[in-house]
Length: 95
Image 1 (cartoon, helix red, strand yellow):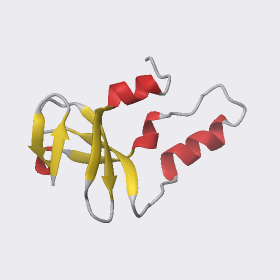
Image 2 (tube, rainbow, N blue to C red):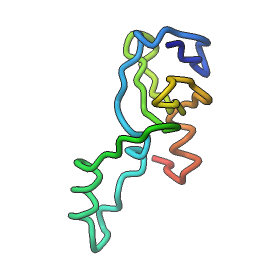
Image 3 (tube, rainbow, N blue to C red):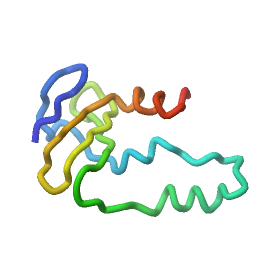
Image 4 (cartoon, rainbow, N blue to C red):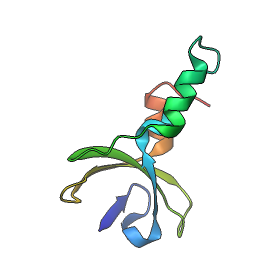
C-alpha cells in the first residue's frame, strides 16, 4: 500500500505505523461532568468499521509526522491523506 504523504510524496506503508482511529484526536474535556465515563470510552471503546474510515498513521521510519489517512478498510484504497495537526486545528484543537 502506498501512502501519499502531504510533504514527502508517495511512501510505502512499511514506513508507517498504524495508530488507530482518527477520533483519538478529539480528546474528552477533563472538566466535563461526565469526564470519567468520557475518558473510559475514549481509551477503551473502538469501532471496527467496514468501508471508509479515518485512521491515524505515524511516519516512524521517516519524518516522524502524524497523518490522518482516509482509507477503505475493505479495499485498502486511500482517498485522502492529511497532516494530523491540520485536522486537529480544523476541529478546533489549537494546542
